[in-house]
Length: 111
Image 1: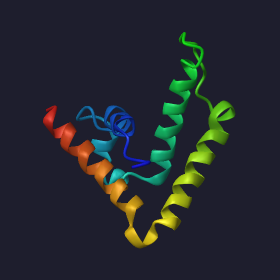
Image 2: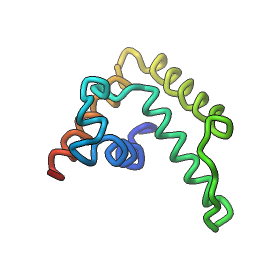
Image 3: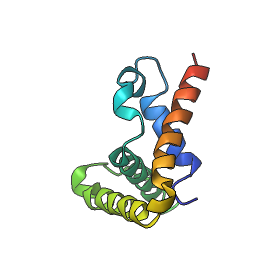
């Protein structure tokens, strides 16, 4: 599905659930389920990485609110729009929960 990319899961795993001292492990209640703003942030970071390789050669691009704030807001609105249009199926809620549960499980496997 549109928000079930492995890159999204890997970004969440690596940033917040990789080690015992990571925020997703320590502050579990804030990541269960993964907040919509967190998903939008990871999607924005992925887009920045793609932009860095746009010319076929890696170009360092600063990941700042000035350069990627509009991109973040676009992803956030898209997620909210997706949630509104799939509300009867609760798809985004399932994605939030699955992203969290998978990240916690992967984190447990690593330790």
